[in-house]
Length: 379
Ligand SMILES: Cc1cc2nc3c(=O)[nH]c(=O)nc-3n(C[C@H](O)[C@H](O)[C@H](O)COP(=O)(O)OP(=O)(O)OC[C@H]3O[C@@H](n4cnc5c(N)ncnc54)[C@H](O)[C@@H]3O)c2cc1C
Image (cartoon, rainbow, N blue to C red):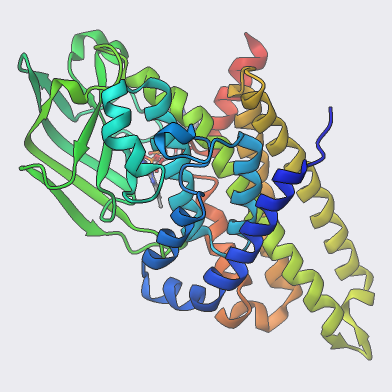
């Protein structure tokens, strides 16, 4: 197993690092405070080729591997997880899902715009009564011959207000349970499609989370992804890859908090010496460094599994479970190392601590990851 980065991957890492420092850092606190979506920054991220990183260049993508994507995700997440979640949803859930399972017409019409960042996508599975239990879909897509009529509500949709293209999971035939679910492409502005108010969140406050309401929305049959009844499988397959992106986000949040705590510990003095000279602080840094390295190995491993055509359900779930735990624990300790300064916004670590929590919740909670992992090892 060789985890060393090649020249191209090192260049991507540097480009992501520079982008995060120069474009994201300057206003990250203000965006978080005001819950402002990073519109200009996302446009620039698209120009860099970071919104369709794994998409074939013939559809406007960068044609890179999953490892390059997680490296970039880590660097962006060190500074701004609100931006990296937009990147993650667009890359892993929307572009990957469309490229892998969409028709040629769908790829020409939607993927080419989504992979360049000309448009942003959203992935719409969760509902008020169907989160972890995604089979309990209440949104319906009734088959009307050449089109579907969609009714229902989706909850917590990332890019909910800013997206142009929405991949919506809905129940067509309740009798068939998860085999009666379809995935449909719905465009913003389609009559009957309304966007609910923006959620006021604990973390990733710059990201744009909304509920979506569908009232008799007419969707042409050619907007269905895959065969009739493929929707649930589409969602699960797509989320399995999405978890690698969120694991990389968690890794980045942890690594960002660690780097800030390390720097601060060498500057701040207490009892006549830098706090890093107190063993209690030095040991915290040792634990953080060790756990981040372990998380990185799991994240890289899952990305390599995907790139090598191996099954990545298990490695992706383990990477997300572990990296999100490390993100939470590391950010709490980073705040502690900063003392009172850790509790105020100027030092960034309080924001990273708030942002870390979501990585244990979305794209499958930690409890759901343990179900995936335990099923895999027990079967
Ligand atoms: C900021 C944000 C952005 C999001 N973005 C999106 C998005 O873009 N698209 C989208 O579709 N969804 C999105 N979600 C939804 C997210 O994926 C769900 O919130 C998540 O899957 C959990 O579902 P739930 O909130 O309904 O919690 P529930 O499913 O009600 O779970 C509540 C608790 O019970 C636990 N639990 C549930 N079932 C079990 C079980 N069988 N065994 C053990 N414990 C269990 C859970 O782990 C959790 O701790 C987002 C959520 C947030 C907060």
